Length: 228
Image 1 (tube, rainbow, N blue to C red):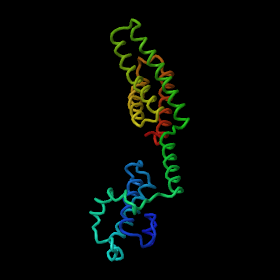
Image 2: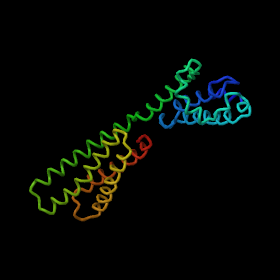
Image 3: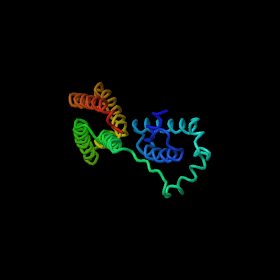
Image 4: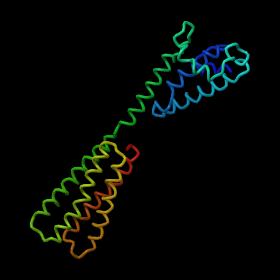
């Protein structure tokens, strides 16, 4: 029973009013919903709930004069009695507050940190996809036949999406991975088929570009765990 009192920062034998006040205060401060559902708050909140349930139902409290009032009435009177001269104030120790702050800061740093490798890879991909998009965009207005112009448009669109996806991953956005990977797969399949086409005039360049995109896709996949 002693550890239940300790969970509420109380001394053994404290009144039901003191337990109720401690429970109200700690439940609010340790509520996981307002603390990003961090494991520390989940565990501490569960301890407070367990302690309150055990103490409020114990036979010791039932024999105490203050237990004559129900838990419900205590909750209703809590706000009005908080200003009385015999009110009981419960605070978390400075050490625990400092621990909560440090855990929250560490979690925020983990969530906001983006590996340098991911940033560099995203920038390189944006540069490559952007340049290729510009090249094909210029070719569209370079006086080619309608068929070739449509072909260049079809090729340009996936590279534009690859640029957007790389930009999103640079910002550690999880949806950037799919925005990047889907057009990459489509382009790789198209280039792979074109390598066996008799009309392909630059097989070495296409093969090199295909290999580079596959390598980038594999490395991005390894960084996927850092996206949120």
